[in-house]
Image 1 (cartoon, rainbow, N blue to C red):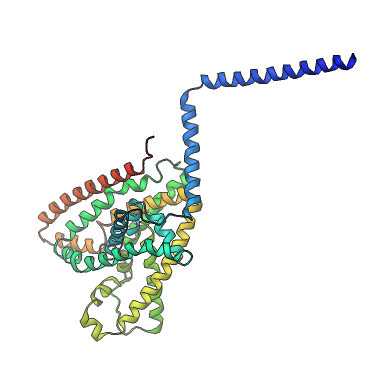
Image 2 (tube, helix red, strand yellow):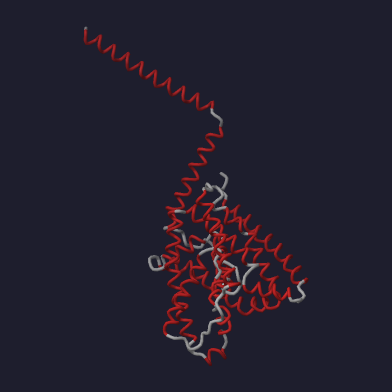
Length: 368
């Protein structure tokens, strides 16, 4: 009897505990129902943003490099075109265009892992490389001629394209917290291309000779090529501005002629050192920048946004544009060039922004 009584008491205690637990759950549900829906939206969005950032970091190393259609491959070619033009047109940034086209991280991965995943990386890079060759040839023989005829108008068009596409860069940080450190990184990124441009204008190195180089100079050309590679991977940095700062831009441009090659065959050794340094720089910097984006994505893209904006600004102030402004100040007629350039700038902004809107719609999740 005592055992039976004890069992009954135990069952009563368990039933009471279960009732209390159920009551507690009901209370919690009731309290939760009384909370405003914005609380759930905020928490869900925060969790989503965190998960998306984590997913981006986790998936970076396994980037899908396959072009899904000929149109996508053509977009890679267009990216290469701008990379080639960046060598000729001051301020144009191929990597900023890569961000606009949502190909930046894939580009970094493909370059940085070319030896690890050779076939897929090579297939991804081929349209970009082909476009870069076309862009360089087009820039050297066509755009360079147009720059000589109407410098301000041509630069204004490309500046409009860069500025109109800038929202696609800020999309990468729109949902992120703008902490004091990230704001500092943005400002630093903004000032870097401006500082380089100012240095090129007011304290640039004198014209350097490429003729009869000494042994140590070949090493310097390798280092210069290494540095130029960084300008192609970091949005906002300009290869043209860097070469102008060191005094090598004009000599290199003038060296591309049959007459020069015949009189100075050693220039091919200079080209070889520049190319070797450039390739080595691409491999090193692609890995480094990819690692930075993987570990500190939000902070890195704050700096990238500043660099991209600074690049658009410096398109209107660099050694070549400064020389154009001096001609205007000296009495050269500039009204038509200024008017035409303003119109082209507006057209460039409009075209680029429409492209950004289209890209945004493509990136939206499909409605079920």
